[in-house]
Image 1 (cartoon, rainbow, N blue to C red):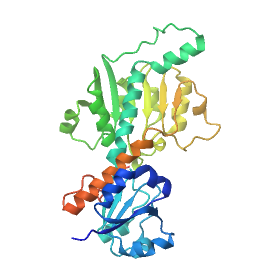
Image 2 (image 1 turned 180 degrees about the vertical axis):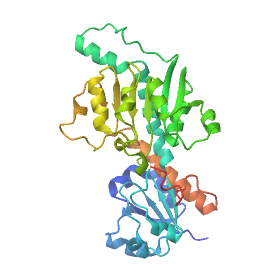
Image 3 (image 1 turned 90 degrees about the vertical axis):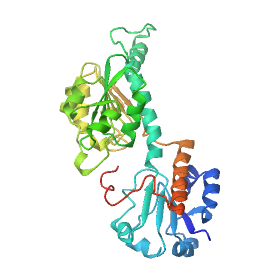
Image 4 (image 1 turned 90 degrees about the horizontal axis):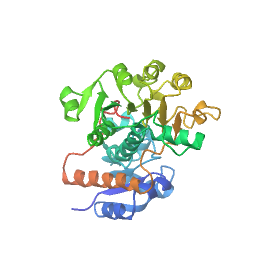
Length: 332
């Protein structure tokens, strides 16, 4: 059988990050494809658009609306080598019955690893010890802020791909895992080794609370100042999801009045924070510039997943991580 026609549909910077030489060679063994990226404005891609049955894409992809799809009458599958497709997939895609897959699970892995590392550092009170030592110039550890794993509680908010991976890693530690997710069954909760808790309970009892909730209309400003006020002495809040899920002004107010708390923030709202944001100067905030997700060679993992989804599609197998009209609204 002849190989189907395909195109890389994303900016050059994403193409180079996501689809390395090994991934491109593997894709070329499956489909007929030009070994360079293109865009809707690329005149040299006009004929390829008309003939393309498969699209490989990633960060910076075009919006697949009626106008673009009219130029792609043969398109059957979009393999997205990155995470969220919220900003590029329109109802026109579902109307045409086009298969969409995402490599969000591959992108979830570095976020889970980053989170797990921050949980370990937080339980050992690493940042507090570092700040105290730098302020006092005293090499001795500060025993008034003891850190430990044994007997501590870690709370996970939302058990999507990242939350589940974090729970799996936490099971290697002597900690109790608590989780809040109204959409997961009790059986699945138990299989992850987690105790079911309400959102309020989770904040009130856990030494570390880690947020993994997607940004949806229903989740905007879901985490309030009252949640932070209820946290136990010396607790840590970690956010690697989206800044808009937190009521940031209320969080800042509590952090200003509760110097015992620590916030580890890889995301903010807006992003980056305004130049005069207290997040830059608060001594109990660790701020990083959205680095938890795939970076450097980690991005190739997503390209490899897009390739594998294509391989499965051509074999007639079910996709590993399909994005459907039903699950589109629930995913990040």
